[in-house]
Image (spheres, rainbow, N blue to C red):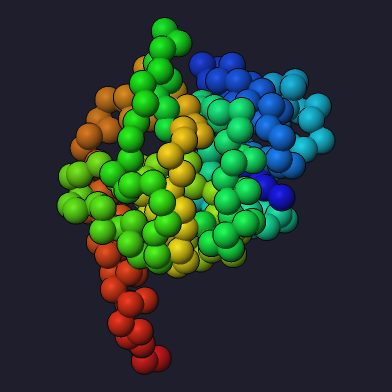
Length: 241
């Protein structure tokens, strides 16, 4: 029912995290498979638990292309009705798939916790409140590019056709901000439960030197993209060719 799409360079300092991510998937009660885009990395480096799991498929890219491109290319290999993006260093809570899949299947709609190095967790409450949101409404909770994004991109379980229409953005960072545009394409539900653990560690991209140099530009692009998409879909404006 669900494909989890992950991009990874299989860096040595993240292999244990990827194994933990896979372990969290094995605890899910909903049927799933994973597509891992190996961003210039050899499949030989894939940890044994993943390499031996028939539910895990790999897309080996011949050279590094970056997270956005790798994820989008892996999306082409999805063969299930629903998609969930994921990072190679995070984890799903045990009922993450089942609780969201049940809502999607029962309502017909279309579309976290922070995990610290010492094992402690803090609950992140997204600006978009729990409950049903009509197409485009989630974006109204992102008031300016500098504000906290309205929902976490990797907490969204959505129909595959919608994700293909609103994939990762063409950015070197903040590419997942653009994927929030899926909330403009169909109504959805924000659940009042944590479904994801976002690991805080020194090796994550957001902790790297120089990350802030492009953060404002990435946010501005994604924010404008979502606002423009929402406006076009609401007004029905067309284009000439």
